[in-house]
Length: 385
Figure 1: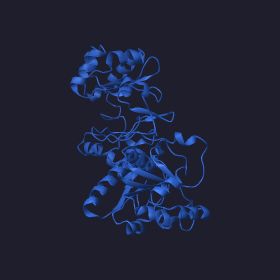
Figure 2: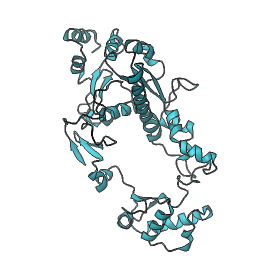
Figure 3: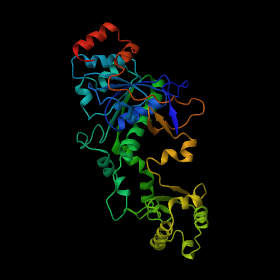
């Protein structure tokens, strides 16, 4: 794990890209963090107010960009944002449909001021459709697409964790869409709206499963398929010390390596893909892994072609030798967090700067973006700034 300072001489592959982030929650900030991690200049337009002293450093999703706090309900606030939009390549917002329009900052208005602007919109249900104006969260969005149905054990409800909707189907899809639109805009000179719905993105993440289902290779229930815990060679197992290991030996040669290293000579295991035997093999593997602590199995299996890994917790993962060697985790202002990803051979991104407190950089941002002191004074007097 590597400690990170404030300054770094590298610039990153997105140096020169200027982005305005209308601060929301979850996937919007994650998407903006990805851009900042890669060297883009991202300005957070925050709501007024102050958090707990010193708490900003824990807001990992806010790292790498400066904060400009504006009261967007005040007359004249939208005009200031539009002046900034004239200098931006991208605007990212994650409000409900219609909110930006009500503030006078909808895509038609922004694109008139900056025709090449890419207007990235992050919502759960999308900008249109019967559910578009309803409230929701990750769990609801992935439930509607079939993605949640495929997660969890057959004898229990699917477990919630907001990776699939918020961050995979939402933030990362929006980032991909924005970059695609920026690429096109550089050729055409024309901007456009990127409508990233978490329902659309979560559905796309399930593309392989839908294809397998159509081919008759994926059943329409949980714990009944190759990758959902039904196969004994693709699952997690509890060890004698209560910790878990993950086994993913799908290919025959890797399965053979698993049997060899785990010293399994039971002839029933030779029928790797006999579904009728899977429950029996699962029971036997459960007993086997439960007979020894996790470290025992790591010594036998980790680093081999048995497709094995220990299931590490939040404290263990940053300390694992592989993660330490790759600097997969970094420490920014005393906070352990994942490092920017992926890696670049020629234009590595800068080290992330610690998150700013709300409004901490308002004056500096406005000055850098061409708003003079006289106007700033007026903005303070009016309560916008």
